[in-house]
Length: 274
Image 1 (tube, rainbow, N blue to C red):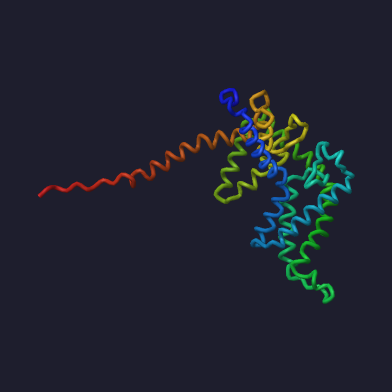
Image 2: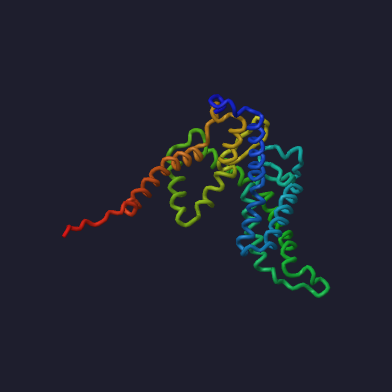
């Protein structure tokens, strides 16, 4: 693109691009905690106590995972490991946030009116929810520490099959068919989130050496590295979605125009002159 629009190399444009990239990266790097807080709040009618409990549980869960597996800041860059909010831990991604969000919401609904003894009444009610969530998150962390590495191997296998360079077109057909079928029910987001924001969609090592996962994050990282048109295949899921939406959009507009056209043209009835 810069070849045809050299002004994009200007200092002002580069500064603006860096700011936008930083703002976007801040979201993509923290999708797990955002999912946890958002799900907990939405499933309890917007209760702040549930979102706080999800945040507490998320932090405790990843801290315990890192301690159990002996993950340090030095080893966090190894495959399968990462840092969440500065905590070295397993690369659970959005799955950990989604799981913690639902757990925090369920615990809030059950314990937000919990009564403590008189001398501990301050910790009753909604204040008790983050406490019990922290306790449950320890149990979750112990389970994930031993189960999730095997899940990672399975996810990587799916990613290689679905988003690999030699993915059979039939796989893309199945993906598109399922996603389109779920749209009327509003469940398509649940289906494509793992592909767009987790290892299921594949992984890419940036020129700086960091690893990003998911089709969306990979595409943005490849743009930043100026590698999209340099022999690196754009992930098939993203390319399929872009092509399908690009061509479908025009036909949608044509259908819309044909539908409303009769109402736009108001023909006056012909009357015989007396």
